[in-house]
Length: 373
Ligand SMILES: Cc1ncc(COP(=O)(O)O)c(C=O)c1O
Picture 1: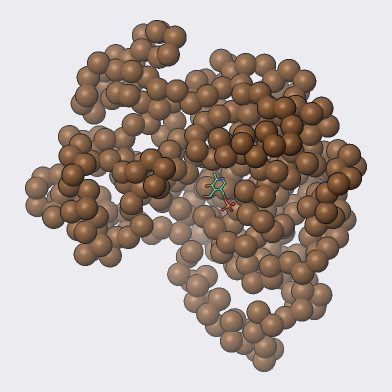
Picture 2: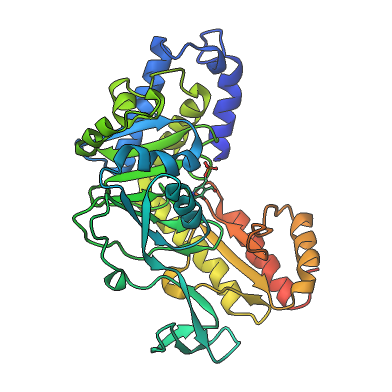
């Protein structure tokens, strides 16, 4: 989280704006908290240019709860289509299968290449088509034009950014069925056209604020579908949550407040155009360090490289502990890859300052030149 936001939280934890009580102690029905909640929503709408025909819900349960709630609220045809682009899509698919019929319109695949260097080389995709791509084998998501038809699916679920695999979508299909997107690790990293989506959901803990609150942005005409969700607890029914302005029960007030401060910070930083330019710049520094050295491997096709999560490994994996120890000595932490894929991961969420990325890149260069350990 941005340092200035942490400082505000620290101050308001003890005494919220001279009221003599902590933000943690406030009733969610108090005028002060109602103002906090309304301002957070207004600022989020401003940042993402959320159209008026979309509702913004603040829910609990994290993004994982949305894997089920999207199905329970929206699946009017007993069939949901998925783009299977990595770890989190697979999780969402597994959950959806417990409730409904699932089809997959595309799967992330690998391009096999004939050179093991980081230089451009000829690659063959799964269908044997010859194409130019960087280093083998490269994870990629086929272009949206190649995705299968969704048929009578109630909606198509996509994952904008695969946090663990470092894979990002680079296009959106045009469909008559609504698009439901998990944007947990990329929301607010760049401007988006909200009107392309039926539902956008995101757990807070990457670019929004502390864990505990989940943002759901939903086109209001989809709320009608919730009428079929009779067996669902009201706190999980999008229509009921919307009707109660996300206060059907006690909301996670502190996380909501913190999210509001992050939204204010993003606006002060110049909004999402500025944030996107910074994120792209930072990611390009790290990818350049990877691509310019034989010491590092990134196995994602350039078209699908994430700017939030850069997943890479050492060409000599037995030196990984040494690399991480060198990072630690320089105050660079959290670089170990997720246990599902191993290797290394640099997560460049919005609050990461340029200085931290410079420090990482400098160390990567030193390490690859044999000076860094
Ligand atoms: C893309 C994506 N989806 C879903 C999740 C799960 O989020 P939560 O822990 O809030 O359930 C994560 C968590 O990292 C994620 O990155």
